[in-house]
Amino acid sequence: MKILVCDDSKIVLSLIQFKLAHEGIGDITVVEDGREAKRLLKQQDFNLIITDIHMPFHSGLEIVSFVRQELKKTTPIIMLSAEGLEETVLEAFDLGVNDFITKPFSPSELTIRVKRLLN
Amino acid sequence: MMNTAHIIVSGLATIEQLFIAIASAFFFGGLFFILFLFGSRIIKDLRLKTESRLQDIFQQPLNSLLITTATSEVSDISYQTHLQELTRIISKSKTTGRQVLINQLMKMKTNLSGASSKMLDKIYISLNLHLVSKNKLSSSSWKIKAQGIRELTKMNYHLPKRMLKLFGQTENQTLKEEIFMSSVSLNKKRPLGYLDQYDPTISLWNRINFHHHLSLYDPRQLPDFSNWFHCKREDIALFSISMVRQFRQLSATPALIQLLSDTNERIVATAIRALGDLETFDAIDNIMPLVDRHWGSKKISLAIVKFMAKIGRTNAQIEMVARYLRHEHYIVRFEAVRTMMNIGENGKKILLLHNRSLHGRLDQMIAHVSEPLLA
Picture 1 (cartoon, rainbow over the protein chains, first blue to last red):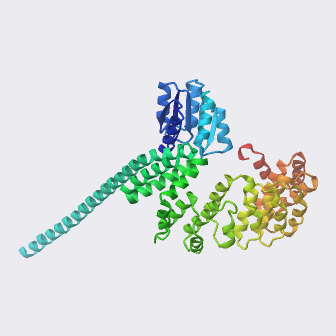
Picture 2 (picture 1 turned 90 degrees about the horizontal axis):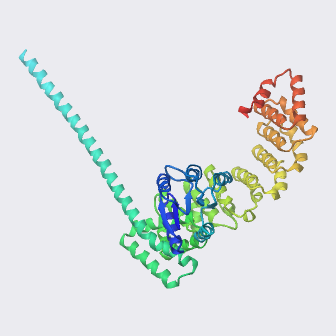
Picture 3 (picture 1 turned 180 degrees about the vertical axis):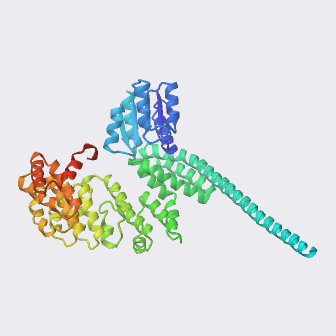
């Protein structure tokens, strides 16, 4: 299982990578900005994408729109955000996000949601 | 003749020397400035590189502590081993290492919840990092003091009461605000308890932070803001009323109605607006007598019209709004027009009748309110 994790915080990336690896969930690739995420998404297929909303170059919402509308892929996407505003959440689901987790988040909860989507 | 020429030549030489001296001063000054800029840049880069390197080194044991021990998968021995590893790294680069680790723990705290968040608090205490933050409180610089308060608050460490008292009396506004927010964040059961003991000023910045902080609460655990309605400080009373409105505390309606007889017009106006936002239809009987009593007050008149925009439906209520079409303040007349246009067909009809009796003086306001692009 290939998972792409996009977040501009190295700390969050490291923690998610460690947690998922600890749970034995797939091959994890991490990127710190939207441009790199788009580049990888064009080149490779992933089984799951976890993305933050606020990132340099391209936002998480742009990534979702890129995957769903340009690449026409149905890869499950989990959005992570410190912004829990109703309209942001609705916009994310409208664009095709499968799950939305508000920061601060529990790593154990994230793992459960990842497992659910991968199954 | 020869003498005059000599004086001019020697004078020129003096001017040239002066010019060279000024040019040299500028040159060396500029050179020194450029070297200073480069030097400070290099030092900053080195500092950032060291911090980044330390952050990477800290991350590994922190991940292990948070992911494995936080879920009780690993024994206490493992917890101690990881802690010792962190202590060893810190001891190599004492001050920088401790500060980098504190910043890292704070960043992680912003992103994590549950058992992992509690584990971060435990690590902070176990490594005695709270002592580093507490030391900052005795610094002569208010910026360092404020940083210390912020660190302790973020890591859920309660400040000693004497510190609260000391900072509660400080003249420095930023420190006062920091200590207020610290008290709000740490006192989960009674976030506004600080207001009872001290006399802080609630700035707009505080209000935003406070609202954000409370919005993360379970609504059932929010304090009853009506307790501070009669606070002698106007800003605290106004703030409490706005919090009741923001968090829709309907239980505060009787206390809000009581405020309608307050002597402070800002408090009365804010209470009316809160009642409108809470859609308390019953309050209309208490609002009606205020029309004549506070006719001259722009704030209260405007608040009444806005209240009616939310609540008013009957002909008697629409006629009450129509009285404000003749108010002395333009903004009140304008709001009355807007309300009557939006209140329904009946409101529009009554508005047009009044406009006719006013010889079309409201034409432009009606046109403004009817324009969708200006809505």
